[in-house]
Image (cartoon, rainbow, N blue to C red; front, side):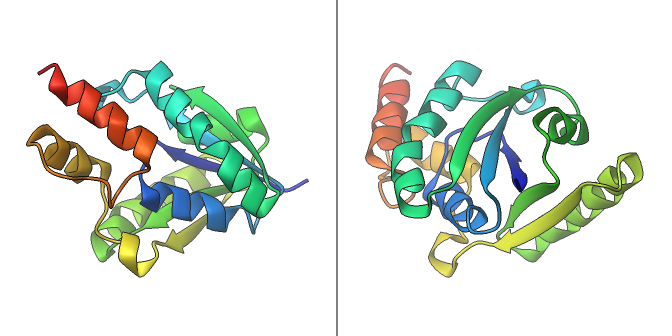
Length: 165
């Protein structure tokens, strides 16, 4: 069985993330969505909320692709997370050249830690390239419409989060 790991903070999960998930499912039999704790980023949503949002999107993706999807929260090194879930490949989404520069460095470090795990880059579909969770949160915080960037349940979660600020 080919197992892939798609890591991220998913704060919140966007249509860009879902595009990468759907396309990664063509490459693997099981795709583990690694939801990173990442305290340094100061996430808007708790780990539990982010896991719930990711899981809520599974039914549609599984129905479309037949791929088994699993959520795995993690707070350790990415390469250790890959080992923990038995992943032979790490899937990373790229939007722009700036993403590649960072990811290139990460691949080098991960290969030095464990060269048995490969990294695969998937370019975001054109209409999803500008979508970044950070920007989605900023637009939502300022009262803008983010419905073009996230699913309706995530949009509702963002509205609820910012209606209390």
